[in-house]
Image (cartoon, rainbow, N blue to C red; front, side):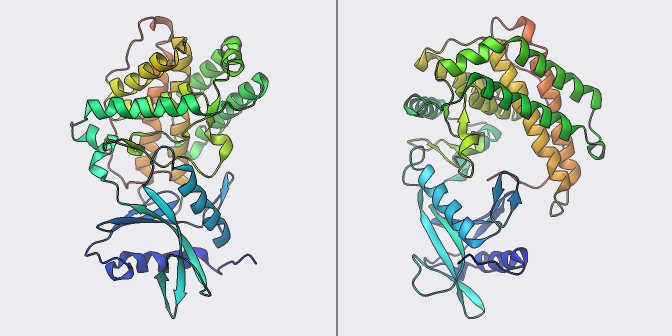
Length: 368
């Protein structure tokens, strides 16, 4: 039987209040760090971490019911074993106990209130985004992380998709980016949005054979799905965490697309060279001969998609500092334009330079 709470968001707040308390955990801890993401709450004790999924409902994901959050939590644990072995332990129940809750290792006859992803604590100071911000990137471990990722790519099965369907997927996403970013309420630069939209479609249509070749060579594979600097932990050995678990199709990517996404995010943090390093190691290890214009297309495509995601935060009633995300959307659009304008002189792989980081402070909200 599928269970629904009357008001899942009110129930969520009760669970969050319970999990904020150090005495709520089976293993003693003096502190609990709470991190809110776009789709979850994460609670970090001295030795463990617990992720509580929000009862969100998006076109691509519905977690309104407890049973769906259970399935999603179990999927997250399973799918992350290859790239971050030993970090994700299991999905465990949060059960009702009198007027409160209790964390159990497994459920017997108790009433389940929700499910938690139980993990070991990952040293957050070793994530790539933090090491970039602190100017202390361990280049040896960075190379190891890139090697681990590319070996994963090499073993990943090809995704069966037709050339027309792959190009239609890209075209649909480009058009959806334009539709959403053009909404008047976001007050974004309409001329810039139109320019990027037209240039991306022009490349997609004029370079049809390039995309056909990627598909026919079996380059579309089951990848990470959400490869960002905060999801690369430079421990020894390195871990690549938070694979996208909720939509299999969204993990089916050209590695160049995924690595271009990482490159854009590294560039946003002021280290475009790190993104180039991953791309170079990929090409060296796979002997995948790549046209540079394709990489730049993917970078612009991903920058625009990130602009769209940032802009959509404006519609979330739970976010207070909406202006932060509109500024961020504008910055991603500017970066998307910079990439496009380098198409004609990129024979030497000219690196992107001088793109300013976000200057408006805001809450730390990420997808995940």
